[in-house]
Length: 228
Image (cartoon, rainbow, N blue to C red; front, side):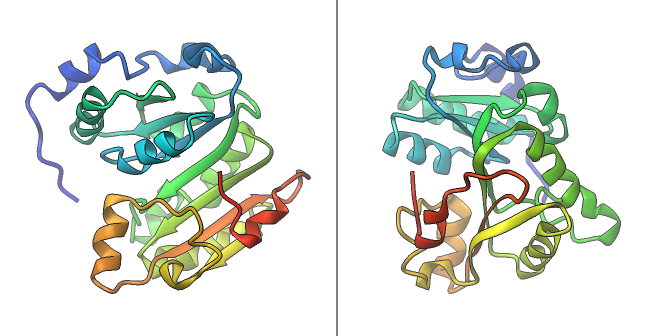
């Protein structure tokens, strides 16, 4: 996907109080940014921030961090925050490959992956956010009982993601291949921009919730549509 450059986007982001500019310095102490000990949930590849901000507004007792690689995209989320500032939201501009340099062991309670880049060529498989390479990174930062929630409209990417779960040492807590017609998994569902667009076209939305097989304490209610 080609992104149109927006002049001045980096400068706006650099001056924004909603963006953490040296995130590696916060490793292991993200609670200091929010001034409380509430759970920290992150979205990797947050796009324009609609999902994360709607989630944060609905759950003020949680802290949320949105990660976005592209300044042009992150700028839109910053502009939304300027219109409706949420105290439990912060942004980071970074590549997801650096996530273990930014978050400490078991510092994150939940990870959201929404409509990630499918990287369709086989040689780029390790760049896909639900790949076993990324699952290994998530394992380092996700707390005991923590989960990953992944949504996409791309069937091939979803099939790939499901196939990666067991070899990477994770297990599926809940899964659907038609989210919007799955009553249990739709409970508490918050849509992204892409989800609204694709579902309105009649495209099925795929979703899974997974946790680490080696760690106990996964929310057994996930299979029953357990939400925030």
